[in-house]
Every structure is written in C-alpha cells, then in structure tokens.
Amino acid sequence: MNNYKIVLPNTKASTYRIVTIIIALLNVITITYFHHYVAKKDTIDFYFTEVGYIFLLPPLISYFIYKKGRAFSMGSIAFGNFLASIVWWTISTWYLGLLSMVFSILGFYALKPDFTIIINLNGIIYPSFPKKIIQWSELDNVVLKDNVLTIDFKNNNLIQHTFDQSENETLDEVALNQFVKSHLQ
Image 1 (cartoon, helix red, strand yellow):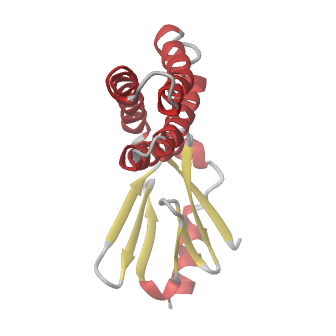
Image 2: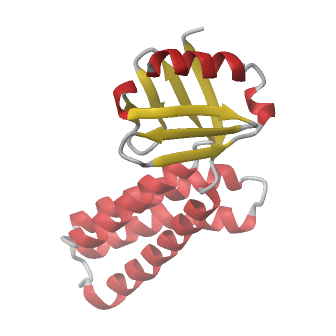
C-alpha cells in the first residue's frame, strides 16, 4: 500500500468555538456602540450597522436557546462573523474587519470534525492551516507505535500525535513503519 491515512481528533475545536462566540458577542456590542453613538442617523454607516445585527443576532440567539442545533448555529455564527467583517470594512473600520475575518476563519476551522495525516510516496501531508507537505528529505524518522505517531525532523523538530484506534481500524502499524523506513533510506 502506498497511501496511509491517520485520522486525528480535533482537540482545539472547543477553544475555537468559544473564541468564535466571544468574537460574535464583541461584534454585537461594538456594532451597538457604533450604531448608537458614532453613526449618524440616516447615513449609510447607520444602516450597515443594522445589517450587522441581522447577520449576528439570529445565530447567536439560536445557539443559546436550542441546544440540539448548536452544530448548525456554530457555522452560522462563524458566517455571521465573516459578514460582520464585511460590514466593518464597508464603514471604514478595517482593523475590526480584519480581526473579525481572522476569527471567522478559525470558527470555520473549528467545524472540521477531524484532521487527517496522509503518508504517501511524495511525503507527509500534514493538516495544519494551510496544509503542509513534508518532503522525505526533511525527515530523520517517522514511527507509529501504540497509537502514537512521531515525526522527527532533521532540524530537531518533533511532532507527536495520539489518535483513537477505533477511527483508524484499517491502519496497519507494521506496514506503515516498513513503508516509512524504505522511504527514509
């Protein structure tokens, strides 16, 4: 076999979710302040702040009221943060727009159920953001043992991941280690 996939759990998803919700709440507070104290009535800035409410309030309300629909609400909140960043750019507050955009991307990233490391003839495709392709020439050793994957680089960096065997039932530890050993030599 020339293509091995190791599914890793998304351990930082809950942190990203909390940060996404906090950013959405901060967006609502900041839009409220801007709406009431900065934007003049009957200006385009005033109306764009109202659009910001439309983007952010419904998904936040549904998140806090309906516990069963939280997965759907998280995507809506991340999308609301993304649209709020456009609102901020439209009313010439680019730094808030940039901040909101970064956290909306993290919110979308939190929705990924798992991460997959792919080991093939070309090297290792590592699920970072953005995906990183690690060439065999960069590696000193790669070992899979007891549900722990260790990637040892020639520059003394080390990556270790534990994973759940139930999500990787078809993974043959011996075959993977032999495949890696043949490509490292």
